[in-house]
Length: 230
Ligand code: ADP
Ligand code: MG
Image (tube, rainbow, N blue to C red):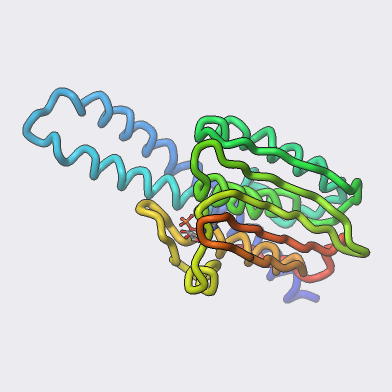
C-alpha cells in the first residue's frame, strides 16, 4: 500500500514536470522565432541559415506538442464522461488546422456511452492520431472520426484519405523515433499507443498505400488497469 502511494505521487510529479517543461520551453522558443522572422529580411550574409534555424525551432515545437503537451497539467485524474463530448471537443479543436490544410474533418457519433478514464491523457492520444491523419492527407482530402460502442468497449475510428503506409512502415508505426517526415519526431504514435494500452485499450492500424489509413482505438468503458504516466 505504502509503495503504491509513493508510486502514484511520483507519477504525478513527473506529469506536472512534463507539463511545466512544455510550457516553460515554449515561451522562449516563441520569442526567438519572432525575432528571427524579424531579422530574416535584414541580414544578407547569413540569409541561408534562417530556414535551417526556423526548421530546427519547428522540430523543438513538434517534440513539445507530441510528447509533453498534455492538455492540462493534471495527471491521473480519473473522470467519468460521455466520450462523445471529447470527440466533439477534438473536432472543434482541430477543425481550424484541418481547414488550413484544405481538409474536411468530420465526426459521426453513434454512442452516448460514458467512459471512466483520464480525459486529458486520452485527449492527447487522440490528438496525436488525428494530427497524423491530417498530415498524411493531401488538400481536398477527408479525415473522419467515428465513435461506436461494442459491448463493454468503445471504438474510436479515425479514417483518412491520405498517402497510406507500406507494409514495412505499418510494421514500424508506433515504435520510438520512427518517422517518414522531414520534421517528424516519431513520438506521436508511440505516446498514443502507450496511453491507450495503459488504459487497457489497443490501437490498430490498417492502411493502403495511396488510398489512406484507418486507426481503430478500442477502449474499455472502465479503465481498470493502473494508468502509467508517459
Ligand atoms: P511523426 O508524426 O512526428 O512522424 P508519429 O509517431 O506521430 O511521428 O508517426 C510516425 C510515422 O507513422 C509517421 O511519420 C508516418 O510515416 C506514419 N503514420 C502515422 N499515422 C499515419 C497516417 N494516418 N497515414 C500515413 N502514415 C502515418
Ligand atoms: Mg505525429
